Length: 408
Image (cartoon, rainbow, N blue to C red; front, side):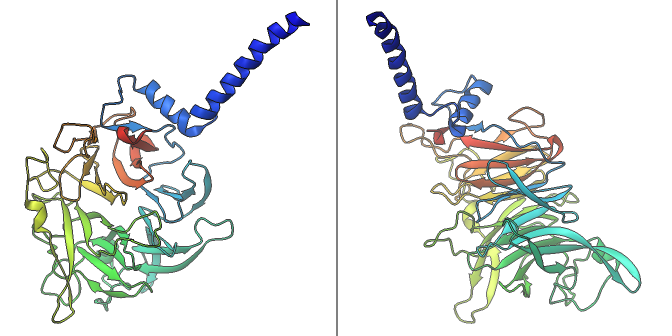
């Protein structure tokens, strides 16, 4: 019996020790721990002092040509691809696919209405036209049935228009959507007609809709033809300063927005523009103007800047993190890269508190390829709970990354 105890006691002690370690450090069944272990395996050169983005595995590979990714106020993951809009939880477990024709951009407002840029076929004067549309969806992520409760169609959704232009309207594209804290909706549009002398809004424009879905006009001060600090040339996307997670108090009330310009027919010095929303104190009139603060390049704080001349080739999507850092993320599908900036326009992330470095640390990355740090037509970007999501279109995946200094 004594010999049996001598054998069993070390085994019991070993079992208790292993279980304790599992409790303290996480078990092999803990996804977050597994992801950190996996990151170390795929990038053995990564050391704790390195500041940069590290892959969070697994990447999501269930998509065909994903062009946009978004995490909603409902904490669900939305991805636009050839099939429509995929609705998943943030682990990638899919709940449903909503078949929206030509789905290209997705966003959600604080009431949990989901908006999707797509196309719709309509018959006008006996002829079928394929027109840009915004689908407003209720209950996109619930267990019950979802419903499309409104469809904003070109040109009917434009209060300045009272006529249909046939093939010209068919050439128009809706390219971006963003919502503000009061559920105002911004819609970016691009197209062939941009006559500033016309009564109607130019095709290159940012349309504004109130929370009910009524068009209240457009940002008249933005130039549809000539590059400037407040132009709208071949718009590819838009982001506002309202983003998940849902916050009962302290949600950013700004109605500013940031645009991505993709016009390739002319030189465009600043392709990513911060547009200020202003209200005239005397008249109460709303206007939109340029953000001159971003022209200040303080080289003591950063090496590169958002408003560096010709910084981008074709920025296609952008988003802002609403955590304490407030970074702006921009993806460019010609450079196949993601760029990270502060809201002061400095490129880079904050140095660790223990660092003697006084400048932002450039953490932008990418280039064309198929490995974990490269992309092939990166088309969409989202940020939620310290995780950066990239829609990598021609690699048929959604990639995830985490800043190395955020790994605990």
